[in-house]
Amino acid sequence: MAQFLISPAALQRNAAILQEVAQQSGAHLLVALKAFSSPSCMKYLQPYAAGCCASGLYEARLGARHLGGHVAVYSPAYREDELRELLDFAHHIDFNSLPQWQRHRELCLAHPRAGKNHNSTDKPELQFGLRVNPCFSTGHTPLYDPCIPGSRLGIPTAQLRDADLTGISGLHLHTLCEQGARELADTFHAFESEARDILALPQIRYLNLGGGHWITKPEYDRSLLISLIRDIRDRYQLDVYLEPGEAWCIHTGILRATVLDIFDSLGYRHAILDVSASAHMPDVLEMPYRPDVFAVSSSPGTPQADPGKSSLFPAVQLSDCRYEPAGRPGEHPHTYRLGAPTCLAGDVIGDYSFTRQLRVGDELVFDDMTHYTIVKTTHFNGVPHPSIALLHRDGRIEETRRFHYQDFESRLG
Image 1: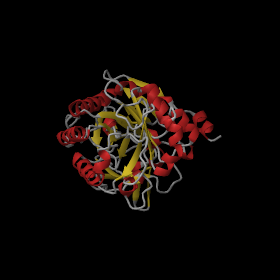
Image 2: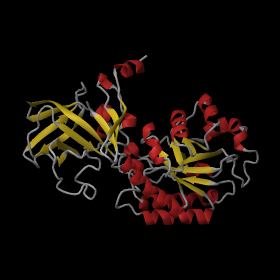
Image 3: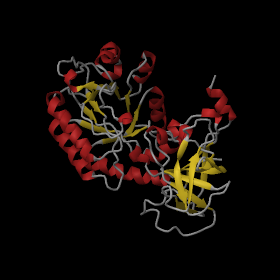
Image 4: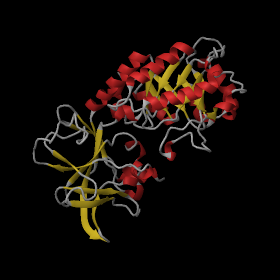
């Protein structure tokens, strides 16, 4: 059976890097639950994180229960019943548009946790912010770029100049996707050039710089990030928040798959697996994204390189297995089109080559399958859902969730 296998040790490795950035910069680093929200893993991140950011009520409840700390919420729109529940336990609630804030302002500011003097320098337990669109695009994939023309995400900076900001304590910028500190710095300075007076208002107490920061990537310029945050805090006296998602869990898990069938058709050698791009790793179709694939041998062997130092090998490995990286089509003698057991014609993971022929029953591993996979999975076509398990330091595998037919049936009413 297919399985998502997550390493708590790898999660803690990333978390320690992020905690060091927080300590050196003075920023508050939150776990973006939209990228990764497995309850069984939150205890490994809790000692390092300032809290969580949520996309709505359900994520906020999960974060408050399993992670604790600061709960920041942003949604393009809130239902009033959900908002009323969030007011009771969230700490920051950010709104996507001025009309939405104006519609809910009276309800929000009347809540006891919001305090009374909303424009004072005191910091109530509950504060409210606005998401801003700086209209400064640095992204490469339009699907993930909130600054594209016609974007529904955030308020264009120009609209803030004459707006009534009564009750607003924070500003929220989220424009990046898998990008570096230089793109963040350029984005902030572009926003600052138009909104310096707003940033300097005494009532503005926090700035949320959103997510999309690849802080735990080896080549990420963490010194630039720390310098930028310190400068913002010093010049504007603001609490600065970051909401990385991928940075907490990059290279912390794999998806184990099994070859179900092999056949030739229309010039391709097809290998059908028990996993689906559409149902289990949708970024393969949406971005598109090409995951690293490895053929697994159960016979013990020494890897060709230290997996902790080489990007050629997955960071999460079973100790009694050998992992051989697949190549581009034609790079190795045997090329296969890896496909899913669904009826969607385009449910193809990609074309990969291997040094040996694949056989039915072989195990393949997809690397870096923790973020934006488990949270986006579906039961499309009734395809069995991969189980979720933890790989502990001692090699023990702890299965935390196995899915059954009842999970499929219960979802459909």
